[in-house]
Length: 187
Ligand code: ADP
Ligand code: 5GP
Image 1: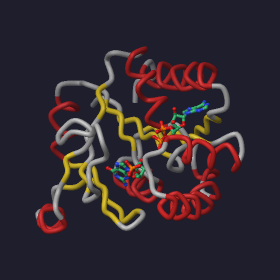
Image 2 (image 1 turned 120 degrees about the horizontal axis):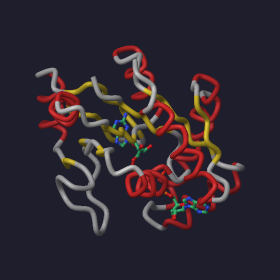
Image 3 (image 1 turned 135 degrees about the horizontal axis):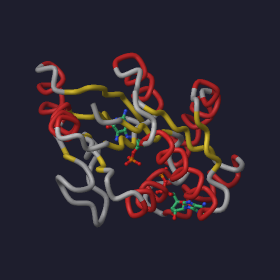
C-alpha cells in the first residue's frame, strides 16, 4: 500500500506554501483535494483548491460515509473524501493530506501507518504576521484562527515529526528529507 502523508499545523503557518514546494521536489506525490463548506476565496476554483460543498451536500456525504475524516473549523466544515485516496493508493501513488489537527488525530486512529508532520511557526508573532500578511481572511476570522492556533500548537507534542517553518528554503529541505526517508522505508 502506498504511503499517506498528513501535513498539519495552524492556519497561516505555511502548510500550503511548503506543500507546493514539496510536490515540485517529489513529483511522485499527489495532493488530495479536500471538501469544504467555506466560500471560495478569490482565485480558488472548485475541484482544484477544494471541492466546495453546501452544508446540505456535506451532511449527505458524511451520512453516506464518504469521508475518511472531517472536522468543524472556524465556522465551517472541512474533510477528506475517501474517493481522493482510494484510487491513488490502489495505484501505488503516495498521497499528501493538508488538514487541521482534529482531522490529523482521526487519521492517526484509522490509518496508523500514515506519516504525520506538524508544521510549527517560529513564534506566535510570526504566525500572526503571516496570517495578516496573506490578506485572505477578515480581521475577525484572523482572530478566531489565532485562538484555535493556541490549542493546535499545544498539540504538537503528539506528532512524530515537527518542522519549524522559519526560513522557507530550510523548512522545505527538512520536509523533503522526512518524506524521502519515509518513502524509502517499506512498511
Ligand atoms: P497555511 O496553508 O498553513 O494556511 P500559507 O501557505 O497560506 O499557510 O502561508 C501563509 C502566509 O505565510 C503566506 O502569505 C505565505 O507566503 C507566507 N509564508 C509561508 N512560509 C513562510 C516563511 N517561511 N517565511 C515567511 N512567510 C512565509
Ligand atoms: P482554509 O480555510 O485556510 O483553506 O483552511 C482552514 C483549515 O482547514 C486549515 O488548517 C486547513 O489545513 C484545514 N483543512 C483543509 N482541508 C481539510 C480537510 O480535508 N480536513 C480537515 N480536517 N482540515 C482541513
